Length: 334
Image (cartoon, rainbow, N blue to C red; front, side, top):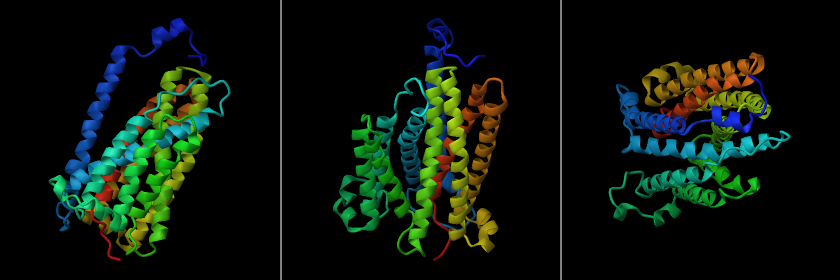
């Protein structure tokens, strides 16, 4: 298989057919439906036997947070991969942007989370229970409003051709999430927020970047530019994985003192979900290594797309599990 751009006839013969596109859409819908079961059913399994009590509506909150994280990854990844593609001379146009749809999904998720904050962290059963004005009176409320407005602005900027304009709304969401995850009552909250800021940024680049890179390769076909783009992404992904691992370990040790980590990983809901996330990331790292070896050693570097596709599915599960993790009670007392 050569890395040359196919002719028009070859493209028609080997390109994705309407049937394959339909099959991909159906498979994607099935994966999304199965992924939604994790935050909805996960809390009861994680809390079983721990003696901990979850907040009301924890399953719905976990699902909304997973949607919010996924909606954040899409535009960040597109900006990242487009930046890499611009360094390749003669590269074709990239895949169509999903940023407008991600902004709409993120706006709905952020609005749902803001409504929970507006009712005192309780699930509202009617509009009359939501105190919109109360959002301006609390730190969590202001951060929730910031995320709602950021996704709204992201939707307005999604069609812009200027990356400098598009980058600010996702950046605002990352900052808001980093501050929200570490309240002022926590010991050294700015340190925790800084770790979360770096961790979430790198995770969004990794997940969203791989998704958009694979979508772009599907549009480009078997070209030298495609192999070069995947190689550029792989080199940056190694650094991203290292930073994600380092910040994740530091954040874990801040929440779980070293002497209690092994016990809390099995005896608390937060620890169990964290352990599941760590195992999933290990699987993702193995798939990434497999893809990198194929990229460097296989006669056709684009065969690396097969493990990369499995990697992006596993990363999607990691995003959903992360949403569940943020909704469970933290097992530490400051």
